[in-house]
Image: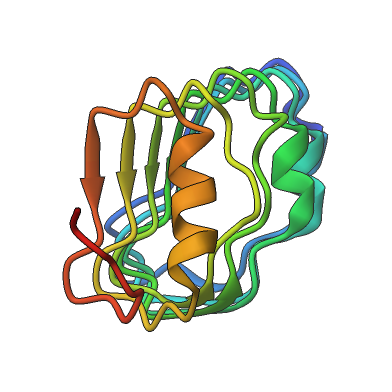
Length: 171
């Protein structure tokens, strides 16, 4: 069967495979029971992250990291994932644009988008975020934008902005 027909599937692991190639199929958005999606360290996966993944309302863990040929921008539909507590996108060095707003991902605790090519901050993230990694991105933002974003996350314990271009004023 095609991956999209595996509607009872709880977790999908497709990682560390030098032979896995092509784009992430949009049919993964039909896996309505999946709680964990692990697509990482696949050097030949290309294309963009499909917006259909925003329909995986049972998803708690989304790990799409270190796929060196994955490109484009992050779909705004990721904000629909209200049960997601982990979003790990680090090391997708060609992933660009702005990080989408994730204020409606109300259970999100860990967001790792370090070592990408992201240039913009979201206007809002979930107040439940405890760990935020945006290191090594060519971020362009004002101190006011950064302060407003950080002020909306009262649970934040870890913040990594190392090797980023965002202005930070230590007071």
